Length: 344
Image (cartoon, rainbow, N blue to C red; front, side, top):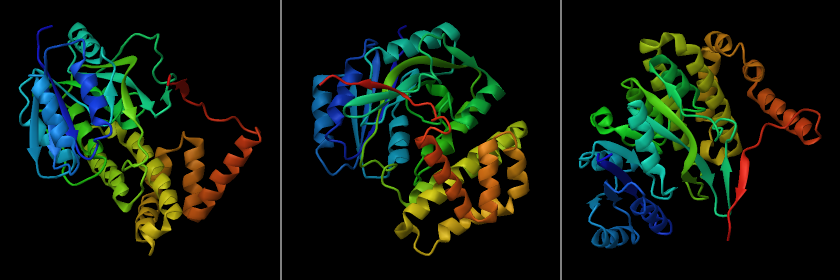
């Protein structure tokens, strides 16, 4: 395995996490790397830190640009990629030292276009791992064509995340990320997977996805609704190219819209006049006949949608009742993620 792997790392306001990220890359057991650090106009010391690492490791290129957001930074990094393969790493995450070596070995063994590693949700004191979706003892899983797209739309095993996957560079070189949106991966992943012949899923958790309190996901705003825009845009694509998956796509849209309606209600100050909630309500009620058919086999989701149609608060009441029943053990708790304590 002599192929070069390009590692693209967009950087913005992460000086407390950047060293951990970069060091996990330079210490990879796979050595033939091109490490592209994109300083996206970060106002802290990230630019200087990146330059210092570049002085110590000739494989590192540092690119400086005006702030344009994560998509713009990834696109700028991609314009400088020369490697045969590419992997995206978010700058507050970190890698197991064998990640790239294992991705390359699996990719070469199965002649894969894309290889995805399992991952940990990483907190300061512990890790969470979904051992149900990614049983460590299982062999890699191979997906092709329509089955791959189905798995992507379900977003369970095959994630919409751009990070944590090894891509053949030629596959993604001409598919840019959409600028100016949050959850940019939802707008991008299906366009990539449409080009994939062989996708391999590794069950080994080798990527550490850091959960920050100050992340864009943790601090809710109306911009978080970009995920709904992404799902609706993707649904048009599914309707045109994978019509058999339309119902699966609708399920994700229903689940996501119900979640965000509740989040908007909880954060009323972000939706003072209720305009965003009205948009969700309009969509779910206008498309009710198609949506209720799509969720026919999902008992809870079907019940939620029916109650929401009567009044959105009825759905919320159902969720409260279910929470109480789980708490008093009348119904089973949902399966929890495996927790792993970190040594201090």
